[in-house]
Length: 208
Image (cartoon, rainbow, N blue to C red):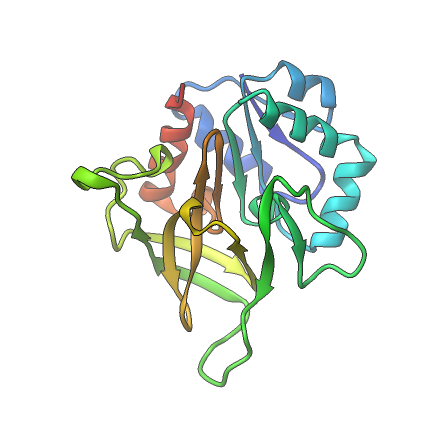
């Protein structure tokens, strides 16, 4: 069972339907008990960092998420849901992140030629391991220059660059997908990214 965490700040319906296309049993929940019972977790998210962390804490989901990741359950953070994994964000005025990944969330620098938020389709450059195989199982069969849909003003800057599974260029390269052990994150929205996004959701469903 995959638990899609509903804390009032995510595109829940589309994510759920995308996972179910590949045979996943999905529960949408804001209950820590459901997270404890689930085999895998998805944390979607749109909106403000402070508000999101407050809602996670209100439901006791911050502790449940940390425990599930510690239990080596596959975890996928989407957009803000990935950003919350980090220690802090330039957007936040009150809250720190979950601190599961070291690093911080930065805002795109304002430039005349660069609109913020970064919104729309952009291409990925996928990190490869030796032998030309994709380094991250979430991106299996995802080719360079695959286009995915973004909607964000902030992006992750991990301390450990080895967790970066794919980058995108928007006034300079930024981390668009992350992978470390059982933790996966994407800055784009796979549920809005048509065939490429559905393939990524399929890969997550098939993770052992």
